[in-house]
Image 1 (cartoon, rainbow, N blue to C red):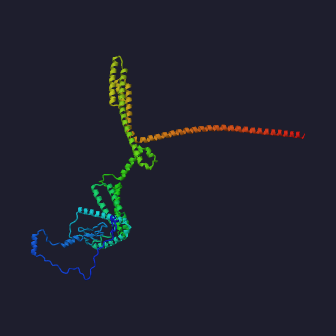
Image 2 (cartoon, rainbow, N blue to C red):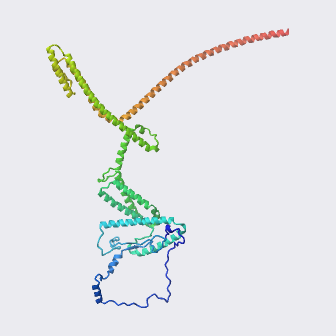
Length: 549
């Protein structure tokens, strides 16, 4: 029996198992009663009187066979049960499982393994779901309890470990023997306490995952949610059974060898289900039609393309220079977002200014057209003003024709020159040249404006490339400036080299002249030495003669 941590530090605490003993009986002492107590049974008449006096009594006989059939398939699990009143450990009660509505047929022999043969009632779907939930929760609680027991066994003091382990082993052996004796007719459902059927738990998890997949497909759940739920369940299951697999594989080597093929098939089936969910979530295979969201890979590809385009367009310097440290990724992203927002604001303001300039251009064009027409009318009036009546009539007719032409030009500025010439000929020969010039001017201006508006969509489409082009033009201008400076430096160096060559030539001439002078001086020196030597010898000879005298 394991001692709780709460009472582990109490003095005089006996952790030994409690043993209840009775005194041995002597041979000459008997516990049987010496006589039989006889009671007087009531007569049938008395029973009738009792029935009449007490109508609430039920006189039907007890159905022993029915009671036996009712409790016969029940399985009682009394392992690790503490029936004592000791405070040294936690109280554990026994559990019972009833299989009166389940019939287990063996392989082809038609033998029932437990169950109620007289019970023809079948479980409904809601009852089965409730029972499965309850049993799954019981399995989870049992596994958690065993994990806690293992942790508690590891945390216990060393003085109690040996004795407690021996006692637990003895109790487990006794309980295993009792359980095996009780469950011989039920197929050996209860095995050793610490042997956990990991493959069975995984198979049950796979079946439940399949049921949940079908339910989610009916309700329209997306493949991404299903994939995330599968990953979560698999990770939780792996964390729960990570420590159990090592002990189970070492203790159940023979059982694992016997069940190798079913375990392999279940693992392959689980892997296939997970692979199908992964493919459906990533968009590699055909996704569900009820899924309202797109696949992950195409969405990520489109998002990465858009982000790359925005980064290359709005921040060319940041994309061109790859020397930024990796530790300041968040700061770089923040700076990039700020740059993008600033450039967007600049583009919005530029578009507003462009719209305002368009309006101003249209207004100025209309003013220019009005002024031009006024100038044409005034020039026509002054040129055709004559004192004769014919001239007056011609002038008035020309003014009317000019006004009509101006109205026609305002309404239809894109007509050809032939119409203008015909109108001018009808108006009069004096204003023909002015009307043709004005028509040509207006046609030229309208054609320029039309061409500008036709080219404007192309300019707007090329507007995202404008920062890159400007940056490259700036770079080219810098390169050209550097090249010009380099060329100037090279020219200066060449000029200095020419001057140096000239200086070297002059120095060479001077050196040659000096060498020639030195050679001449050397010859003169030698001649002088010879002359002086001869004179010195003559003097010595004279001095010698003088000394002899």
